[in-house]
Length: 464
RNA sequence: GGCGGCAUAGCCAAGUGGUAAGGCAGAGGUUUGCAAAACCUUUAUCCCCCAGUUCGAAUCUGGGUGCCGCCUCCA
Image (tube, rainbow, N blue to C red; front, side, top):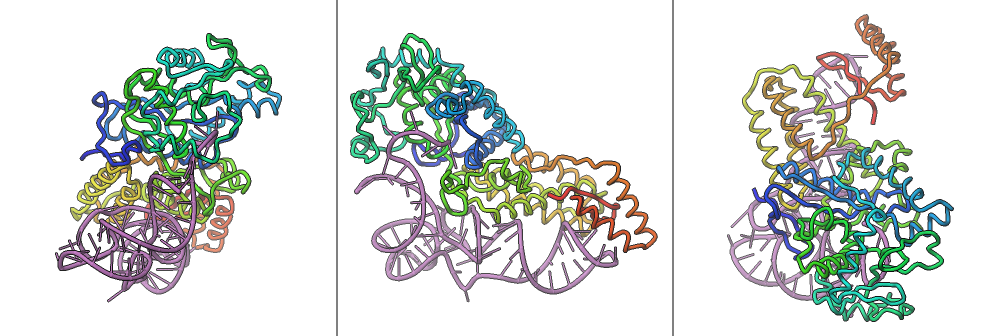
C-alpha cells in the first residue's frame, strides 16, 4: 500500500518517497515561547504527532526537528514588560510546553533547537544571501530582495504584484527597496534593550523567518523530506523560508509541505479578545484529562477545520472510555471456545487502519475500523466464542495501533483505604447485604472510583 | 479585488461514479440482586438548492446560496 500525502506545494496528493530509503527528515514549526500554548497550537502539534507516529509505524526512521522561537518582537516586548531577562522569561514557557506535550502524549522530537542558540548559523546564512545578491543592508537592517528570487510566492500561490496592492502593507517601511521585502536581520534599537548580538552583521537580532531556515538545514541538511505547520504559516513564513534557503543553496529546500487547518472554538475564531483561548491547564481545571483532549484533537482530519466545543469534548471522553474499557475487559477475559471468526476481524481492522492512514492520514476512517473491531470482538466475547489465543492476537493488534493512537489509559493505583472498602463491599454482597454494598459503591463513586461486577469478580476504574 | 477551503442525521464525522462507515447523544430489549460494562434492535428513502452528464451521482459538470480562512511576523 502506497503512503500518500497531500502536498501543499502542488496542492495534490502525492506518493511519499523519502530522499533516503527508510528515513524521513521532518521539520515541524514549533512555538514562539512568549506565552502558554493554546489548544489551537496543540492541534497542529497533535497532527504532527500523528504524522510522526504513523511514519514510524510504517517503519521509517524519523528525525524530527521542532524549533523554539525564543526571540522576536513579542518575546522581547513581554519579557521587558515583566522585567525578566529574555532567556529566563522564555524558559518558563518552554518548560510548560514540554510538560504539556508529555501530558498529551505527543512524542518528543529528536531536536528542539532554540533560535537564540543558533545566531552564528543565521549570520552565516544572511552572509550567503548577501554574497548571492539576494539581500541588502539599509542602516544595519538586512532585507531579503524578493525581486531577485524568481519563484517567490510559489508555495502560497500568491502573485507578488497582487501583494503590492494589498491593503495591509504599512507605508512607513520606507527604508526597504520594496514593501514585500522581509527582514533577515534587524539592527538594534532602544526598544530592544539588552537583547542583541554583536555579529559580523552588526549589533542586532535576527528576523522572524531566518531561524527556521538556519536550523532546519543544520539538523536535516539543505534538502530534506517534509516541513509542516499551521495553515497560517504558509504565508509569509514558509514562503520566506523557501526564499532564504533555496536562495542561499540553489537547491530545492523541501519535498513535501503539509499544513494543518485551524481549530476554532464554538464556531468562532479563537482569539484573545473573545476570551476563548484555552490552554491545557484550563481544561484540566474543568475536570478533563489530557487524554480526552488528545482524542478530540487527533480524531479530526488535519486538513479539516476543527470546531472545539465542550459537547465534543464530552463525546471524546465517552469514546475514549469505550476504547479503554474494551482493552481492559478483553485483557481480563479468560478465553472461551473459538468460533473461528476473530482472526478475520483482527486482520480486517489492521488492513483498514493502515489503508486509511496511508491515504493522507485519514484518521476518521482508521478509527471507524478500530471501533468495528471493538464491537465485533466484544460480541464474540459476550457469546464466549473467543479463544485465549484469539484474545491475545486481538490484544497484540491493539498494541500495534497504540503505537499511533496512544489512547490507552495508564494503569491507575488506589490506596489501601479504597482497597479495603472494595473488599467490604464484596463481603456485603456475598452476605446479600445489598443496601450496604450499594452504599459503599455510591461512596466510592463520589470519590471517583467506578465499580463493575464482572464474571471474573469486581473491577474498579477511575472515573474520567 | 486576488487566492483557497467547506456544506452528509440532534452533535462530531468517513465515504470522490454503483446504491449512506464509525463515534457521541436518544429509544427499546438482553444481561445484572440493582448498577456498571457489554451485546442486540432502532435513529438520514437520502447527503445545501437548481439544472446537466450517465444505465446509475453525496460523489462528475455548470449555475446559485450559505459559512470560513489567507493576502507580511497568528499553530
